Length: 83
Image (cartoon, rainbow, N blue to C red; front, side):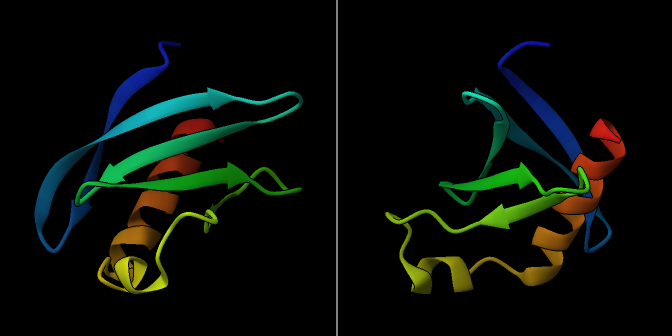
């Protein structure tokens, strides 16, 4: 799998593509998804389902600008692709 790819996400009756970067870690990996010029970081939990994590450099007020429904759609799409 390439380290950059796009995923299609249906949100508010529109189909959009989001750039995903695969980041390999020692024993795991993260998926960084570009949304509104921000990199949202997702990683698998103990059950293999994706969750979004807040990075230390992310400003809490910036994250609030991204609709929670969009984040949920991203998680659902990533789970479909990887599970």
